[in-house]
Amino acid sequence: LEPVVAHDPQVRLSDVQVRMVAAHMEANLGLHIPLRQLAGVAHLSVGHFCRAFKGSFGERPRAYLMRRRVAYAKLLMLSTDLPLSQIALACGMADQPHFSNVFRRMTGETPSRWRLDHRRAGIELAEPA
Image (tube, rainbow, N blue to C red):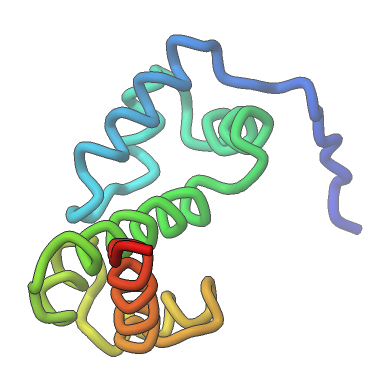
């Protein structure tokens, strides 16, 4: 028999820890960020940090980080002409195929299709009526 571990939904990061961890993630979106490092920012053990992070953010640290990386990629795709391979690396993805898989899983579209569609929408909105 395996031990039953009670999950305490009340375990949360403090407001200061939330701000510090979120800022650390945002500042390092293009880098590998080990859980041990994030837990260190919050001054917690890895296990306690993971439970408290989910209690505060509603998702696991990796899921949150990937969502923020995709949001950053969207910003770069709309505001620059960087190739997708460079955007992938700037967002902490291993390579362009990894980026494309993650992006498609999260948005339902490939990065190139998303970029094309959203740039067209921006042009249409910018034209005078």
